[in-house]
Image 1 (spheres, rainbow, N blue to C red):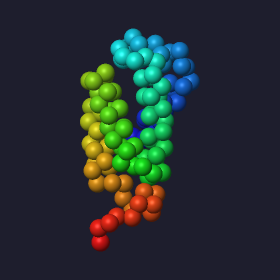
Image 2: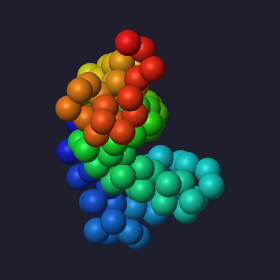
Image 3: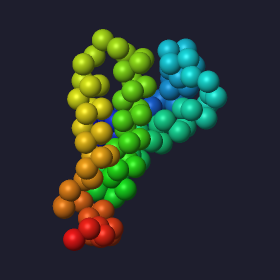
Image 4: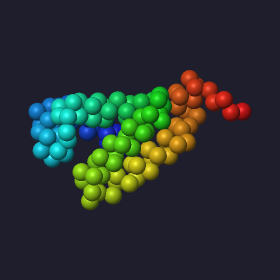
Length: 110
């Protein structure tokens, strides 16, 4: 899932004019071009954070929100449900013991 969002962000950077047209014409997003900058930045930064396990819950929640937006824009694809489920799981339960979060943020529970 992180790879999918990261590749999407990179492809938006590769052709910024097309990205702005996409946000304006297909997504019909208000606050253009700020929304394009924020979404593209989130698509690049959140997957990196998720893979590293650094700020995992925030990254997963960000990708959850992006998944909802993608689903609203392209409702005929079922993959979005899997993305949302994975993101909610990480957001609620955390990334696990191999994540950097586990080493930097010690739980208060014993």
